[in-house]
Length: 46
Image 1: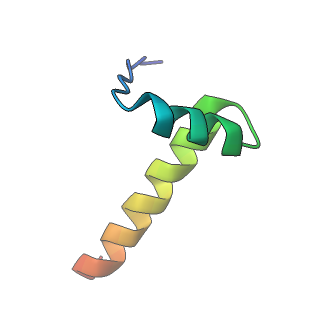
Image 2: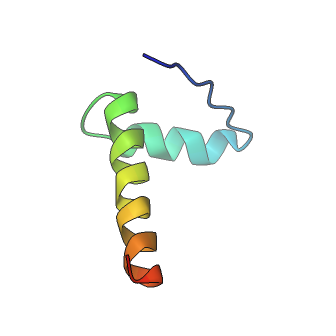
């Protein structure tokens, strides 16, 4: 399994995100990525 490092420069935004998550951080970020990929796929007609 590959591991990635996420750097967050906006501390306030990060705190808001952490407060809003319902699952673990990794799962939440993966769901955001998947949603973005699906959204972009629909834009390009894929």
